[in-house]
Length: 67
Image (cartoon, rainbow, N blue to C red; front, side, top):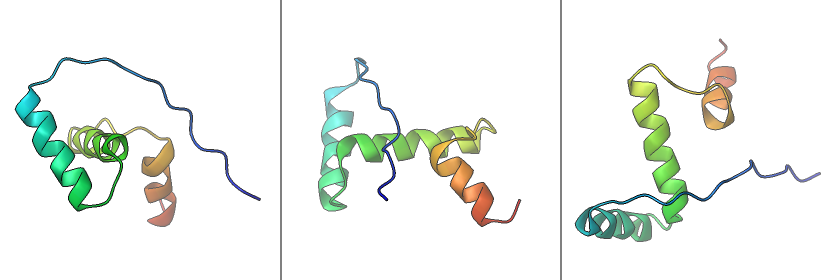
């Protein structure tokens, strides 16, 4: 049975065009969707600052580590 994809919302933010351009290049190099790469970057930032969510990948990492 196929897992349902997590809910996603659309947001509009104002960012520097040069930052977006570089980020898009990285996404293309990694063959990863822009939004997936941005989500990963946000999760890593939150984890670094002790604010990791207990859902999605953060929860999976917790289970995999045996905590």
